[in-house]
Amino acid sequence: DDEEEEQEQLQIYGTDNLIVIAKTEDEIPQLEVYVYDEKSENIYVHHDFLLPSLPLCLEWLDFPPASSSSSSRRRQQGQGPSSTGNFIAVGTFEPEIEIWSLDTVDGLFPDAILGRPDKTKQLLQQQQQQEEEDMENGSSSKKKKKKKKKKQAKKEVNPNYHVDAVLALSWNRSYRNLLASASADTTVKLWDLSRDLTASGDESGGAIRSFQVHRDKVQAIQWNIMDPSVLLTGSYDRTVKTFDSRAPDGSVGAMLGADVEAVRWDPWDPHCFFVSLENGYVLNFDARTLSSDPARSSSTRFTLFAHDGAVSALDVNPHIPGCLVTGGTDKLVKIWNVNETGGKRDVSLVTSRDLDVGKVFTAAWSPDDALTIAAGGSKGKLQIWDVGANAGARKTLATKLKNASVALREKTGDGVVGVASDDEDDEEEEEDV
Image (cartoon, rainbow, N blue to C red; front, side, top):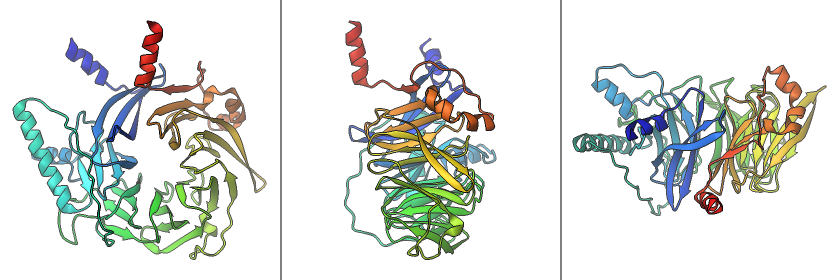
């Protein structure tokens, strides 16, 4: 009965949404995989992974790395490589990128590491040894990883792997074997996940390309979904740049007034993108108007003062055009409506809310629901916000929702769903008593 109940709790249904977050709790860095059932407005932690270092960025992908443990097992069993999977790439304060299988519960090791080929090979050997020990013992135990604490002198840039923290990741949905990474070592790296990442030598393993288009830490990166060879990057050198990964010398960009926090291509226009800044502004550019010399003045399509403080979260709605979400260190999450008539653009605030996540670090639109947002922040909490529960937002966006053939289901409540903290659970128990 206990086993059946445990299996039922682990079961994921087609109507469930999976949300992956990275957090540090009691100085223990970890990934948590949440299941969100929209119909019942229920959210809970399904399983988690312990990380060796403080996490900085995440990127979901469905391409199985060639050197992953799952790929190795399939080869040993005489099976061909799997064409799809369910993986999360993690960037941390360490220079390596870890790729974890989200379909594995209580995993001790990532499926692959992007970085120095010798470290990747060592990881796989450790993982195989651990799996053999677990099979012999008939059990699997999760061990706490110790956070690495070491000071290193600044290393020289290496074309094959990063030598400093990985600050941003972007998976190419058209060329599914490609993953781009941005680092504090000032470089952007391009990784081919179909290659053997454990091989040594110049022709194998490591990154397939290294781009140095910035002079300082590269904070943000994203592939253009409608022009999949083109990358967009933002840096602490206060520039934003876009370039074709096949010809990076032809990059164009703009000089900005503050450090870059986030960048996003407009999924409704292949030439335009958004960039959020540390000084509270969000800018919109047309890449066709930018110069190869960022120092030259570049005009924006529009400028928005979004938050009192850094705009650390930015996302563009993939379901309806001209709808943005921003989040800032002022602890607010805001929804914006962009209308364009006669060549003029009007940007208005739809609604804003303090979701009780602290300083907002991330906010993203759901890939399935037009007005659902997941947000997280300095309190280490995840909150789901159904903006459609707000009557004013429904009214403001009604025309766009209708044109996009999006139907909203009637809901009760304030539209916010989260996981109660231990303190909140204790308070509820005391009230019940």
